[in-house]
Length: 203
Image (cartoon, rainbow, N blue to C red):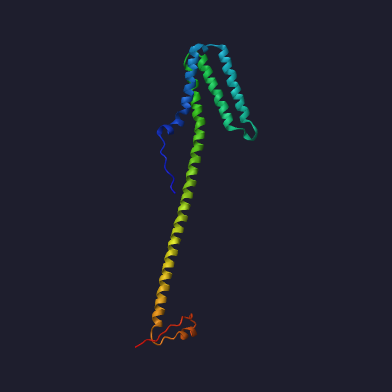
């Protein structure tokens, strides 16, 4: 059975592509709002963000170095959180836009670099799934075609066999009605025994 084709909206397709830029831009905007509300040159706020960013980076390092190669998802999340806190801290502490914009560009580039790996993996998995689905569909279609041909062949053979049996029966009945027909001669010749038939006719 053919699977239904689902046409996704362009916004759904574009959302993963713009998500890294939206995330870093949101952090930059929030950092500048924080800057305008008293975080500019605030040593306490800067120290807090440094501690939080360092803690997130440390947690990511421990997650990456765990047993069995570590947890990649947890490590990636921790490092992303560390970068987000660092960007927010710089955007909130700095008095101008050049440094926050520079860090925003670097963070966006890194985010796209990391996302590209997952996009490639997802694309390979999707292609492999599509190939497997296509192969299974073709195998099932081939089996269905073979079974349909076999069924038609069996029906045709049954019809031909039935027609042959009917024709043979009609021929035997017609032969039995002829004068001088001897069923015993057929039996002596090794043919199957036929039922006795009254061949006498009234003239």
